[in-house]
Image 1 (cartoon, rainbow, N blue to C red):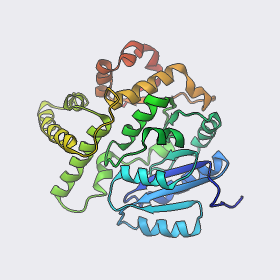
Image 2 (cartoon, rainbow, N blue to C red):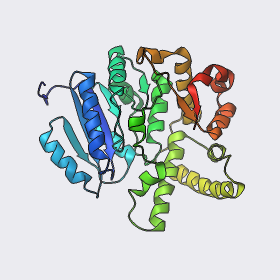
Image 3 (cartoon, rainbow, N blue to C red):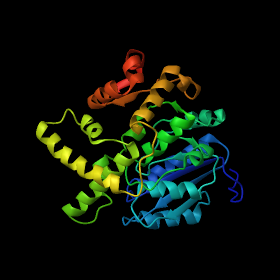
Image 4 (spheres, rainbow, N blue to C red):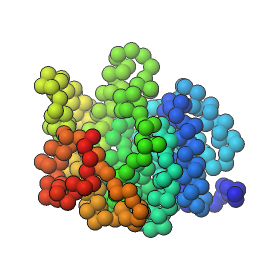
Length: 318
């Protein structure tokens, strides 16, 4: 295998924020190295860590000292969006592939990524592991320092301007390693109930910003919950919506809820069957939606409402 040349811009940069996932990090990084080798050309892995206190920081430092393809960036706060941004800014590849350090990716994504790279498209690839051209990310301003909703905030801007090639699919070998949203957030918390509440508050506030969502949007995603739970959520959502308005980071103004922009981009791509260019042998894509998401999209998305029958083969119930 050819040695990595630090002065040469790599073809691909795998980038991530790591926050207290030491129990999953080695497997994740091993899978990313395998994908890097599979896509061909040169690659680098840039991980923003910070501040992990579970042994991940020390492990990453040891790995980086022996692997010239791995670069570690320290960040001072547990902010996924900032980590995404700083990892991106420290990377140099023409294509950026964000990954999740709590997830070990199936090798089946190697051929998918290789075919997408060959297209040299300004669109983003949306799958269990995504890929974006550096030029597209820079053109829309990159990731922003959001604790939650950082990806939908960026993806909506990229999709609105450049489009998306959607191949939503998951392989059991990697899907089984995913962390739930609440479990992930609690890994970053040190303290009691107040510390946990502050973290969940900050995440929800930033998800409102990232999705450009209203309180009614959020309640629509929780329509199936018991009435008493919805009343409590309404108060919490109102509080976090106020925090979003007071935040120095405002929502990306794209005219609509950013979740709808992303979903409509995926729907249009699926309907055009672009996915066959990256997975000619299948399996066909599957886009899981909850019952509440289905109801919400039926009301807010004309694409979903008008083409639901044509989309049906691609949709699965969460």
